[in-house]
Image (cartoon, rainbow over all chains, first blue to last red; front, side, top):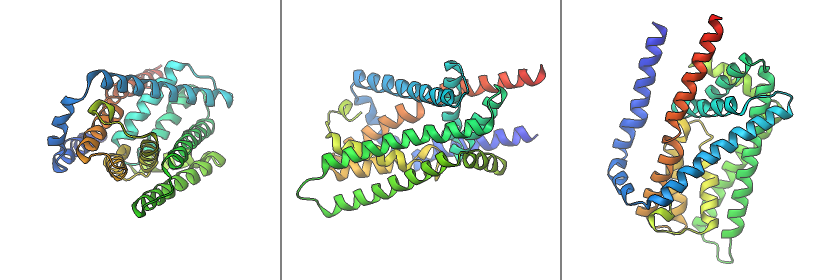
Length: 189
Length: 91
């Protein structure tokens, strides 16, 4: 009975987020223009996305290995893809993704604390790359004539970058936080 | 995706928009930053001079590739992990 209720809730949420919201936002009309995209470049984008997910799985596997936990690439890729699914279709998805990682790797004999630490460190590396990209973008766009709107956009983006960096550093320093938060949120959901 | 719609944005604006949108998506307002990423990317790229219609199309196209396409393989991977865990529990 519990699984049926969860299943119904999941389908309702998915229908709401992926079916109703785009219609309300008027995106259905805009989406029709997607047919005019150049196919070769769309194919290149799909390949780049696949490579990006593969690299993330590889990074996660390397971080786990550096913590003494060996994992087959196939399993690391499977966990990465499954975490991508749950984190993109459930509220508080990062926490649910963490829980999925912890429970899956626990079955493989990897301690929850090690998984929490690996997730924290992987997020830290990912956040550091984003910060470097953001800084490079800012350096490339900053010129002698800086407009007010540019400063506002840069200010908002800088606040977001600083918040993400603080969270990533906190989780990196205290990996248990990710694990505990994941379990707590999963209980609530 | 901007190139696929015939517009070439500069590296700087694209880097700032991409990094800011990805960081904004970390705030758990909607699953996977749905809506947050789209608004952030369109707002920043238009703010840097991209035509609005092209920016909307490019961002929608990017999100189809970046958000929607990995979901089916993700579902398969999830089912596989659950089935493996179930069979391990039985054994």
